[in-house]
Amino acid sequence: MTEHRHHPTVEILERQVQGLTTLLTLQEETRQAESQAQLAFIMVNGTLRLTFYAQAVLWHWSPTGKVIVAAVSGAPRFDTNAPQIVWYRRAITHQRKVQGFDRIQDLALSQLPEELSREGKTWIHAHGLWLPLNHPRTGRNLGGLWLTRDRQWDEGEKILLEHLLQGYSASMALWSAGGSIWLSLLKGLRRGGWAMMMLMALMATFFIQVRQSALAPARVAAIQPTMVTSPMDGMVSQFYVAPHATVTTGDLLFSLDDTELKSRHQLAVEELALAQTQLRKVGQLAFSDKERMAEIASQKSLVREATAKVEYATALLERSRVRATTAGVAVFSDPYAWLGRPVRLGERVLEIAAPDRVEVAIDLPVAEAMPFVVGAEVLFYLDVDPLQPLVGHLYFAAYDAVPAADGKLVYLLKAELAPGTKTPRLGLKGTAKVYGDEVTLFHALFHRPLASLRRLVIL
Image (tube, rainbow, N blue to C red; front, side, top):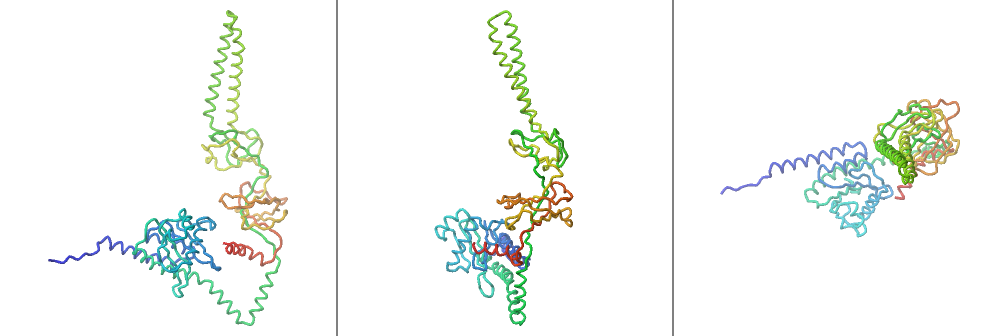
């Protein structure tokens, strides 16, 4: 009897070759990563080409030993104070105390403490895989990957990921070693006799007084423009002026859809005609029948009521056609973005501004905030002419931050242009440089890094 030997099918061999090819490709991509951000992106998103998972989180240690969530799969940007990210930091901090922290292991949601497990049901899937990133020479833990999905992990996947982690760890160790260059430089300086003199000179320069300043996006805005709002609930049907067109008092600006209003007006007119016909009929009958005289007063009342309805419907039709109440420039966005768009009573559609009365509106990010003094100098660099800044002076600074168009919190500042300055066109954008009080050079250079460090330490 001939012995039958079982060989792997072609499909199985192809999958194995594909898995090994993907493994080698990912390791090569991590070695060629040009930044830590690119390396983190490959780790949380590229690993999906090797094995399936629902979510991946990459974390590492801060200089103070705190957990930093560096990347989340499918999320190029995320809020470090979001509830899900805070939960991940707590869970990773707890897992650090567990035996076998620096080894690959299954980490199901049920293995976490009851409180973390209960909260984690909202954020992650039931079955997780803990993938620590350890330094290839010293074995020191650099961080790790946490993959989660709804089904368990098999041994084949763990073996592939273990080999992949070796490449990830080596690449992460190279980027983590950047700070050692500065340490070596400081040690070399200490061996020289002039190091102390250079250090003292450097410290002395930190006390030089400089003017504090902040850069922020800005635009040319109108001073006290006239708001043109929707006179009723409806839908914009047509614009009669173009953006930034000059208008005079009484010019037709836009109209709302009047289909329903015309129907109501037609019904009111027909109702008036019917009431007038009934009044004439009753008047004619009253000549032969004295009892009909009493109906004339009621029919006149119906005619007056119908007349009022016609006048009201006519007024609504006229109100649907919005006209300019003052002369100036019509300031609004693309008219095609408004056509067919529902509007509510009082909703702003456009502004009418005087083109010769403009100011500089500045959206200062919260992170750039500093004490401002009314009258402080402002330089406005227009994008269309960045080499010729316009000079102005700050006259308004908001106390409360408001969300900007991109969702970031900003403080609104306003500056008036200096007398004799050529008036720029409304709507032009640029960058404003706002000057503050004099501070030391150390404060000017390091107040933002120190603020970031303070937030990091608090976290």
